[in-house]
Image 1 (tube, helix red, strand yellow):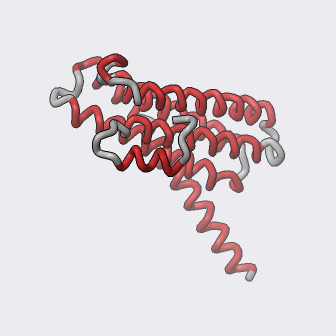
Image 2 (cartoon, one colour; image 1 turned 135 degrees about the vertical axis):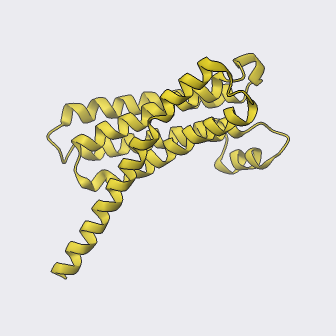
Image 3 (cartoon, rainbow, N blue to C red; image 1 turned 180 degrees about the horizontal axis):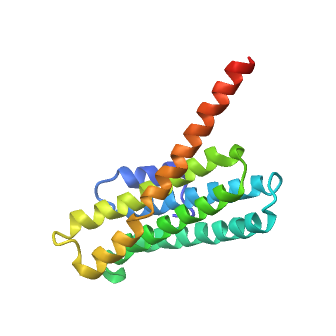
Length: 182
């Protein structure tokens, strides 16, 4: 996954003979991590929470690498990794990313909200893709442990929606202010 061009990745994803959902979900998570990294870097210069932003930026970088490793694991025979383990890893990572986006949002100015909204939406998509894969492959939900772990991760969806909504609200407020001052 790391060495593919975007076009090669999309070609593999479009090929019905190649398992690709996990790599796609992991790439969404990696992109979300990169956007959080960017938002934290931008916030370093506009906030009093410099230490928090430095820590968040470093953590987002580690999470981006984690997403790439999970994406590589998704390309391995799923039986070798454990049928439910890869989607659960992606779901856990996505939930962690949403939490990190919330941390950056709480310490940053509104100008980084678009990056964080895109990150939260991407992480939410990776999380929901993992949940969809699990529900389609396990008629019984994958057993009690899988259902509990997934439910814990899915609780982050509300946080992702709040980050996206806050970004929209900030944009509407800015447009309204510009019209009034205009």
